[in-house]
Length: 345
Ligand code: NAP
Ligand code: F7E
Image 1 (cartoon, helix red, strand yellow):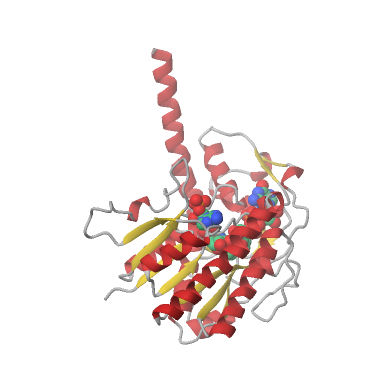
Image 2 (cartoon, rainbow, N blue to C red):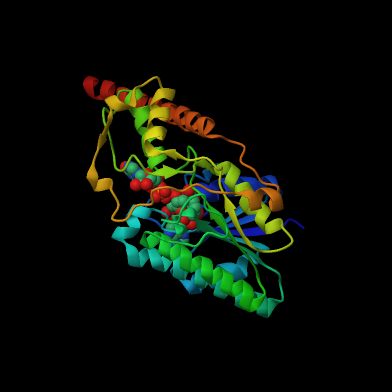
């Protein structure tokens, strides 16, 4: 029998890579999708099959982390062996603007799901393993390098919510003997990264500037330093955590940090451009409280799980820039085609 997994946040960056990984391992993958007035499944369309297809291995359910009744129903229907809780309002700056919603989805949402699992396990006698998507943002202002023993010092409503979710997960592990593991993942990026996160915002701009579709890029704090890895590598760490004999807490990082300025410089250079000609500072992107320096120590994940990152900083930058140059070139062709159509009309 194939193993089955349930993923919240399946339509996000990590959800899409994790789905691909689990399918490659023969899993049946259930995913929770939010109802939206426009399509929000672009990242997983390539693995999705029509419900009438007898060979489909991705099953989507409408649901929301703010709706416990729906979560309970999906969990009962999917009856998964593994649950990956990746769903979240994941943007730090947005969390200052929508703190209450962020707490509802990210902190209470995790509690709702844990409580559904607790009841499901109790009344069915089934074994369910749970992965909680924790974040290096939980370390916030703590001195780098940060590892599993570093005390949390969250600096945003997002980070506070993730700390709450982390401790709910620890408490449910200890109180009910459930297999619950917290991943504490440092920033991870890819060509599928949301376009308002700084790396993708930069590589999208590089592509569009190269194609002549944009001439400026407005950024906030260039001095912040982050430990950036590749999302495709990091979902493998998530899976390994749930295959391990014991639950626990694991930091996942590359062990190298770069500033936003260095990322911008590398990304523009990868396209043969000088970043200083295009980047301008817009203070509206500054955060009320900033996280200055995140640098992870993933020794535990390396020794216990045998995990290590495969993609380094320059490979990541190159991968993202190349993908976004391709995307912008497509946009340019559509634009040129439209101009031609209208000039003939
Ligand atoms: P992402 O691209 O922003 O994806 C977030 C996912 O959560 C999307 O599928 C989104 O659905 C879904 N979602 C948002 N609100 C929801 C709600 N109320 N109910 C159900 N689903 C909801 O995030 P990501 O980069 O893949 O990150 C995955 C998880 O890891 C998140 O929990 C994030 O906080 C955490 N994390 C990320 C990083 C990183 O560097 N990427 C590092 C550490 C931790 P829509 O598609 O409909 O918006
Ligand atoms: O910001 C600075 C900004 O939004 C990185 C999420 O996945 O990783 C992510 O959170 C840095 C910050 O990511 C702009 O001030 C400058 O210092 O790309 P970001 P984040 O806040 O680190 C963690 C681990 C998560 O868990 C989160 O879910 O870049 N920065 N200028 C900017 N940031 C943005 N977004 N936009 C700018 O224009």
